[in-house]
Structure formats: C-alpha cells, structure tokens
Length: 333
Image: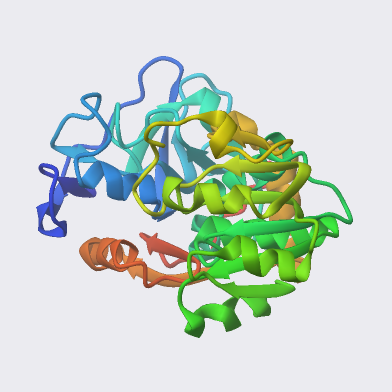
C-alpha cells in the first residue's frame, strides 16, 4: 500500500510516499481501506516533535480517516461498510490514516451510510466530534445564547459556528485576517470580529454583559482575554491550541479568571461522537440543511503541500487528503 511516512520530526521534507505492507488487524481490531482523511493541528505538533516520547519514528501520522471496512475478523462490520475512525492513539501509538489502509480498534469505528463524496466525508469526523463535544460537554450550550468562537476560521471553529446556528445561538467569531471575514458570514456567523488581541472589548460593545459561552481554539496566549468577554456564570471551554501554546505560566486563578466565570476544557475520542449525531449531520449536508467548510483537497502525494498550508495558517476550513476519487460505496445490507 502507499503511505505518507514521516521519517523523523522536523520539516515537511521528512514526509516520504512509500510502499508498505498492508497491515493485518490484531484481535479486536479492523482494517479500513482509507478513502480520505482530514488534517489536524495535533498532527502538525507530532510532525514538529511536540507530542512527547510516546511517538516513535518512522510513523504514519493521521488521527482520523474515512473509508470502508476491508477486514473485520470479529464479524461486527461487513466488508464495504462505510466507516469513520478517529483518535485512540492513531498516528501516535500506532500508524494512522495517512495511508491506503489502516488498522484500528473496533471501539473507535463509527458506521454510517451516505452518498456524499469522499472528500466531503473526509472533512467531517474529527471536526464534528470536536465541535459537538465542545458545545455539549464543554459549554452545555443552549438555544438563545450568545457564543464567542476564538479562532473562528479554523475547521473546528467553522464547524462549531454551523452547529451553534443550527441550535439557535447568536455567533460571534474571530479571525486575524480581514480577508477571511466573508468565509465566516457565508456560514451564518452573526458578527465576524477582527482579532487585534482585545476581543473582550469588541464583544462587550455588542453584548455589554458578555457572551454566555466562549470556545477558545487559539490557546493560552488569548485565553485571558477570552475569559474577560464572558458574563458572570458564563462558560469558557478550552479546546484548541492553534498558537501551539497550551500552558499558562505562573497561573494564579483568582487574578486570572474573572469572578463568576467558569473555565472548562474538552478533548474527546470517537466515543464522544454518537453515531446518530454523525449520521444526522451527514443527512443534513445531503439535504442542504448543513454545510461542510472545506478549504483545499490534495492527493496523498502532495501531503507536504497540505501540511505547509496548515502550518502557515492559510486555510479557511478543513484541509482534506483524498486517496480515492470514486463515488462513495454505499452498502445497505
């Protein structure tokens, strides 16, 4: 099989397209024929050598993938069934989705049925899981609330805005690049804000008492300001680290967190995305009730370009790598 192998941490030139043996599923695992996968910032950190000693090299990266069941010794899934998989050590503890085949535990496989093209399907799993989990587990969001999304043109930021609008929330979302505001308004964002480092001031000009909820996707450099944009008894969920910084130095909670504001965090697994939520979102995309924010689609042999685009923060939405351009294989059995 063809795979994008990262020989060692470092620049994108450490990626090489190689022929590897097709992996065999161990007991309790399945083999998936990968059709597409989305790129994630955590893979950038792994490529840069910032994922800790648990990752050994050479390694096939990729914390998510969509495709079809190729072999399931347990008989849980039928061959050809459309599935998504994510997290659970993919691309870190064992080889992940940057390949034509990957083997993963049964526990992190979600079956679905959809006529959507593979590029669209490849953009969804981790993006939807993170956005859905942040809104539910992290923020306990509800209809009628105001939400601030810090890092709004990231794939998770855009997916969160789409879900929040479907929930009936008023969405304020940020970007550092004025040229990207149109990408936010097109998906329904009510207030696209240019992030000049002082978003709290801008938010309170729109919502004087502060927003009900805020999703922090940039990281610790902006967290303190994000907290100050939230009302008393409002919630900030720390989910992302687009900045590459995730530690608050000399953290003194009484000075750092405004009185009465709640700070939570979210980091999910495949089990945090109910199959019904995934299927419902896919069905809504087909019917036109929901959209998938895709930035660029690359073939596997251009994975270096894809990582460069992610690293340079040029994307508005999800970067996807497509391994097979054929129509989705829908198995109704």
